[in-house]
Length: 231
Image 1 (cartoon, one colour):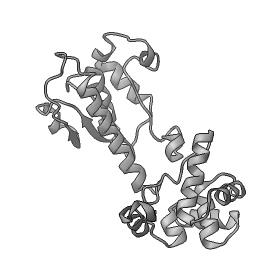
Image 2 (cartoon, rainbow, N blue to C red):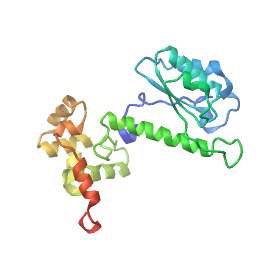
Image 3 (tube, helix red, strand yellow):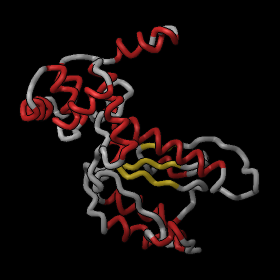
Image 4 (cartoon, helix red, strand yellow):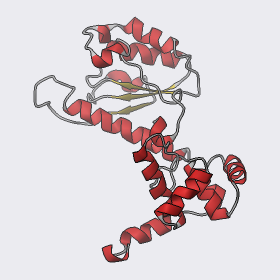
């Protein structure tokens, strides 16, 4: 999330049964602890502005249920992602997303199809959320962070697409904008300085569309519809 959409690390956080160490070394049985799930949520200082997404392929994981219970007590909205549509939690959470993956290739191994399906659901949820809060322009990730050469190249291509300049000019524009993609686009589109571009973005709630008063979608659709030799 931080490299792709420029979010602070505190905005989207993951809580796993067994803690961070369990990501790299299995800790069997920790998912059965309802109380630890509730405690893990208490440590997060959740409030009514938060959304908690519980992920349990079987729908029965006690750690997840404990965490969701703790979040509900704090007033957070609750989404439950499971591959068991028959779970009784539909009467307890705000929204259930239950992809019907069918039986696993290896019986009972929910880290296979179920794991893949739930990851796809999480990808869609975060992508939609980032689009809604203005982290994209058309289908471009205009809040991308440029901490590697690959990401700097992506930033140059994004600026080139939106402004119509070539890659070299896009690179120079980004240097002047201190590698802030949104600011670089506003600087070019509105012929303003970096401080002026940043002020425009701030007054537009960081939305490029509002900062430059232009919607990229029609031009993107036209580009996509054009024959290959005209793109």
